[in-house]
Length: 60
Image (cartoon, rainbow, N blue to C red; front, side, top):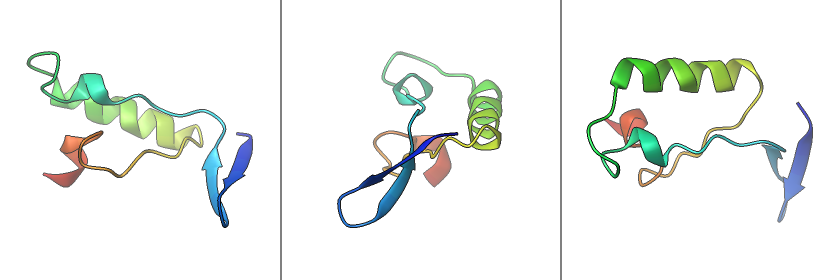
């Protein structure tokens, strides 16, 4: 996975994972599918945002 450096040294993957659909914003989500998707992204080298507004499941 290609990496990029932001600001003063924060290294992130060139591709990201949009997780808003994993929250309750669009209705009831599927936690099992959401967690599997996050694991697949991590295994592929994607950095997952840690902000609770983006990935509620990671903070529960």
